[in-house]
Image 1 (tube, rainbow, N blue to C red):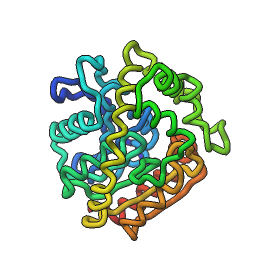
Image 2 (cartoon, helix red, strand yellow):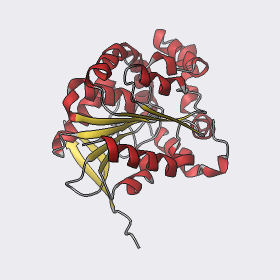
Image 3 (cartoon, one colour):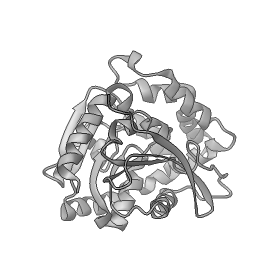
Length: 291
């Protein structure tokens, strides 16, 4: 009987901030960094990590303001994607990680893209699971509210975007596009909502909604990086996602013709309903592509 890999739950101090991360797998194995999205944390990888850690050294941090990492108030820390990227880079340096594949989802994508653009040679492969890198993937019905808030912060636009911080909206992210909703545990959205509901966390999330406007302008540089470096790309997408639609997955082939694109039955948090399929695709992909 194969022993299930042990997952360690650790903290590191980076730039004076305490960051939580999950770690598993042999020290000398190829490294895979898992970067989560909104409104979750490394909790979203709780089942994926042991499914990969027999062959890979897996690191899954909680971004500042999420999960069990520090969550300083917005008047103590400037919450931007640049700042979250700097902390992630600092954590990887602290852990002595210089070469790694990355798995990016939602907010994890713009953090991953910044890491790759800053140090292209460090990235051995990219796995994007509903993590957008092209304008084509945005579903306007969801994003109109975000775009309106980015354009002008008024009581009306703020009230509308605060709808994304509710329990109903969190549940919606997990269940939309999932054919069999019984596959998704309520633990997921209740866990996320409890952390979203901490005093002051709403202002953190509003700051990141505003700063998300800085991400699409990076896409041309990302596309140049993809064309010039041709990193192995696996786009594994919940095709029922109503935030980042399937066109976002297909677009990666524009710049990496060998990109492997899989549209699976599921939604934004595909691991909850198709975790075994995603793990199998990753193991096969990294086994062939990541060195």
